[in-house]
Image 1 (cartoon, helix red, strand yellow):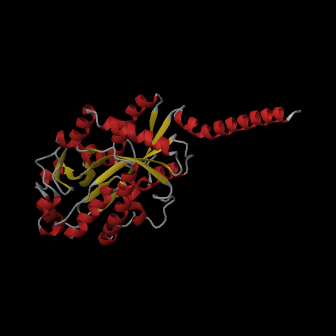
Image 2: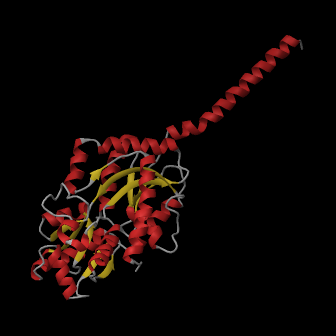
Length: 339
């Protein structure tokens, strides 16, 4: 074989090798760009009917339309959200299992639980904050009327005069609903027995039925019962009044000097198992932000008391980091414990 023939043969081999290498390198990107090719599961770590569930079911249909695959809500309640969060932490990082995380699962629980079965920072990649919401201090309307409780001051007065006669429902130990109540108790020197449920939905059923007395629920899940007159809203737990309930004061406004500085809002956002492709994470974030910006969904959320977000993964990660610091202090100062 001549040197010219050798050169041509070697050149063809080199080109073939280069083409193969390029094709191999492109395979992961190509595979990711075809995602999703099957239904995607959004794990909600609480029972149906609560705010976490409501918000997940608000974004799931929009993602289904955007990606042409079903985004299915899967309620896995238990242990203050830890059961569902662990399921996602242990799931494959292929983009087919997501978590609707909360301030409880990713802000409170690491300070409250001695041993978590997952690391809320290392085991997840933040996608986007879906919404922030205030909690609302509420009572069964009939019981509030019977006890002549019309505002926060009335409540404190009755609770101090009748220690142990009122109970406090929550969506589970360690949730923002639980911690808001514990913070209220520590700041006012009142006592209410804590009754943890597996989500706001079951707790609200007992609130409406008169089996639970007071709850610091996320506003969206309680709005219908407040509007329907089944529950009496005494105050919202945010620093400012909620546009959805403009006539209801904040706890700080209504509670007097002992509650100065009281603030205990909640948030909800999508996360994926650590190692999930940045391309998939960014595509989900972009579609969530787009859907939350549409007038219909935005107005619906605001009417329920939720403030839609859709922020970047980086900004959501910063929020989670800051919430760990904030709630660790609340847990320590309130003396809150897991039931």
